[in-house]
Image (cartoon, rainbow, N blue to C red):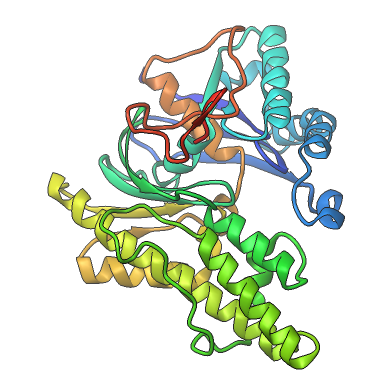
Length: 365
């Protein structure tokens, strides 16, 4: 498929309702004609995390509004599009269903092709959207619900080198913020507090660095912080502002150290493929953390590898990456129909074993 493609993308896998229009002409840089994101932070603020039922209802209420705004910003109508791409998983199933059903309705009413997109592929292909990165490249996908190293070999071909065996880093940041009485989302709150703290005061563990491979663990780190917090409260009768800042700084430093060392190992494995232009790219919400970005940049400099990080607005969940992933799938000749199903779990590497084991309903990750 060599013609210019213009796709509408829909994203509703967690707590951000998003719609965007992306256009691409072969041989040229992709254009993000519009990108609308409606967050839900206020709806979940009193609960210390995302409530799936509240999120799903908010998606159902906002999706059509976001679509209308995205088309208006792009100065286009449905008839001007070449297809509709939508996150079909993985994610909170209520939100994913809301997005898939909205996309099906739009496709049925307009006669446009429907393309289901893996949310993780949206993040993993973002370097292609922003920098037209050439395959193969190494991707660190690090967000609130996911953390894994992937070698992107094509729009539909991903090899997982390792990932978290328990909490994702973003989840650990959120839980840390909750433990320390900081507002959600936890990532920005902990990062802001850490700027005032001493990262050397508390020496938190760096899980799994004593074991080979690229797998990671962050649950024990969170538990270590909880114990240190309780010790400080018992010792001083409460948590002082300086203590909280130092705890955040120490926690953030530990996460950055783990991601940096595991990135070195993943890079060593990736470089055995002898790519002509080696790249380590990072995407996902935690990629917005500047301390972590700096640590990864240092690793790349030492390895003589290019480092790519998308603009901050494209690190977190957005629909532009879904529209772009849809364009990549369409160019590969892949389209879906009205049998497209929402999937709560959908690993990118179908051949790799599940990271978190299996239950009655199948692999958990």
